[in-house]
Image 1 (cartoon, rainbow, N blue to C red):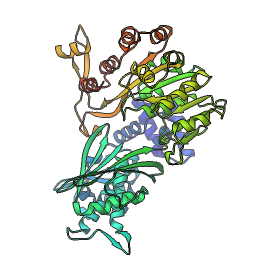
Image 2: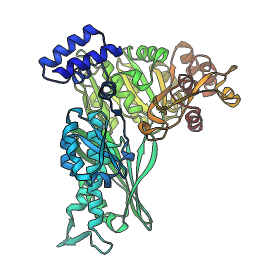
Image 3: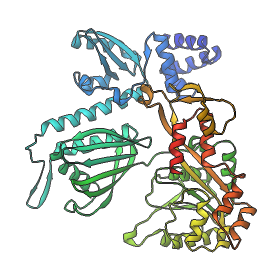
Image 4: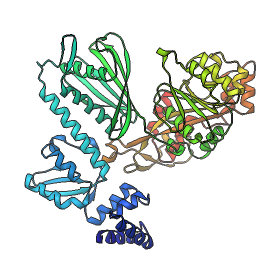
Length: 552
């Protein structure tokens, strides 16, 4: 392909690859009858975005990353959605004389020119990665479906009816429910909140830890939508006065998801909250969590121990489960028997025996643990230590030659010691069995594209404990980060290693957490210190640090 040869020459002149590499990969791409940029992305020589930025420069068009919030479904709805999906293009801007198309396939520019006859406007092309274009088209399809449902129903329509004692829900409401779940997944939400009020029903998504208002639906339509979710989650649709919990399993874009459904009665009806679990999510790298440098060495040292307890602590939504799964993947080898007890099983890991607790069948953490000890495990992971019985069995397992990983609810790493003692575990057993505790929180990461370098003010120097001004970065906002200034989250960690001195302090008759804190103050990097380091590294902001300080 002449294109591959020319684009390869462009990349080598640009310095992205050498001439020898260009020749090698052009030959390979021609043999596979594929574009050069696709081969380079597959081989991880270029990132997908890097390849398309270079491709846009070569073709003389702009590259653009569009957030879903920038897309106007009404503009897209002027064209055949099937045709746009076929051509991998999305209209993103329209003026009196021009139409801007976001394209995922540069080889279809000529075909796209046919749209000019539908608009009678000049066409402008901007390039983006195909996955982003596909995600936008999926979002638009869902949005148009929602609009169709809402316009089909008037305020006088009866959306939910009972005939012969049977509940009947119209097909458009089913589509509306499905589209809400799909939109939440496409936006990267962790939770869906559907909240009934007197005049409207509000839909909010939790994205990067923050609740964002997404849409509203008419009050009269909500009973049908609520019933739809209840049916999907196997809940009692007739029960409206008591809270209920259930689960929905769905495949979206070839990925498996669990949606944990919770209902709660309010004065205006039942509030619905849906937690989203990506079953296929995989994170094998501790550095992606934010565990780097000295902290990584400490964690790897803990995980190398043959027996004992390692505890993770932090509030709900602080990433404890993600960390536990990452540790399990690190430990998962063919000569190791790993068994987990979870509620729920959030991620399935090949080679690990995972048990889902079922209180209705009397399969609790405690009862499961008793049976697990007869299954010859090397490593046991307990989703959460919630009660005295579970804590005692876990402790006994640790001192009898098993490595136990679990989570517990405390404010900091030191608090895990006090919590175990309060649960009735003798101090000498805590001292003997506990290897370490990891406290973690999540902070928002600065957007790498729009962050702005600046110098610390006097106030910021005081907050960060600096004697001299230092460079830091501030949040700005751009389309890539949805104009928030942040993109994604990263963990900050406090790692307490139980060494001989810590064991002595725990075993002392007059043990207090203050005495332990005093020793660790100079022997452990605190959560605050970890967050300060991320600020100085340009990964987050002082605003996120102050928010963290409020909850520590």
